[in-house]
Structure formats: C-alpha cells, structure tokens
Length: 180
Image (cartoon, rainbow, N blue to C red; front, top):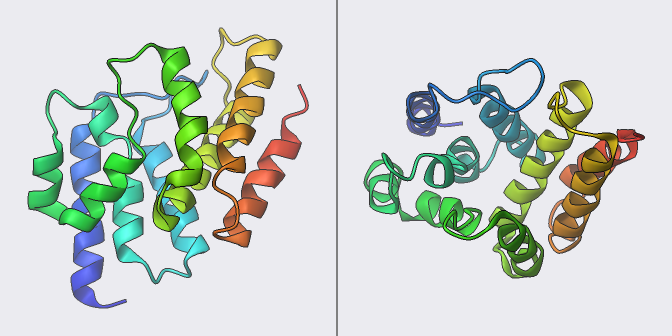
C-alpha cells in the first residue's frame, strides 16, 4: 500500500478515536468504542485484501455521523477524507431522528440498494456486532433479545449478499455461534 494511503488510514483512525473518545460499547466489559471500529476496519481490510483504502477509512468512520452528529457532519468528512469516503459513511448511517424500530426496518429495506462497498461494510459491521454479543453481551440483554438481534442482522445481511464471499462467510460463522 502506498505511503499516502497509509497516512490517510492513520488519520482516519486518529479522527475516529477523537470522535468516539468518550463512547463505550454496550457489552458487559464496557470496551472502548474504538475497538469496534478497528474490528470492522480489519474485517473490511481482510475482505478486500488490503487493496481498498477508501473502504478501510470508511469502516473506521462508519459510525461517526450516527453517533457524533453534534460534532461531526458530512461536510467535515468530505473536507477531511473526500467525497467517496463520506458517501460510503452516509450510506450506512441511520437517521437518528427516527424511532429505533423504524431505523431497523429501514436497514432491512435499504440493504439491497447500497453500493458494493457499503454492503461489504454493512456485513463487516454486523459480523463485529454479533461477535460482541457472543463475547461480551450487554448485561441487561435477555436470551430473547440476543436472538432477535441475530435474526434482524441476518435479514439486513441477506440484502447485502453477493458482494464478497469471504466477509459473508465470516458473518455466517458468527451467526452460527449465536446459540442462545
């Protein structure tokens, strides 16, 4: 990978760490949120053989508009990381003004219409989320809630399939580990 691309990835990692610095995962261990972002970017990097720096950067930043909308906006992403990265991030961002049930329904509905890159990112994100639920589930989540999340994630990913067999197999493996 060219040194310019490596620098862009490190800048995105730094930006994501700054933007999510006070955020923790919902899991019982309360992991720093950046752990999720690095896991998703690692999965994306592996899925693309490390050849798509734009997608790796978008993976690091994929939750920044959704979670940090008061401090970070689309224009800031364009200015710092370019339109291609910002567009991918926006594609996978939920409208947080909507009720949770509606956001979840829309993810299922929109998944088939995402770009190829956004689909890879969405699958990696869902695989990482399943892994978190398996390894460090939120303490207040019942077995039923875990099952419902796994079923919903499978519906979202169903609309993304056909873009990358490797990341799809990672998701399927995590899905199969969710025997609650």
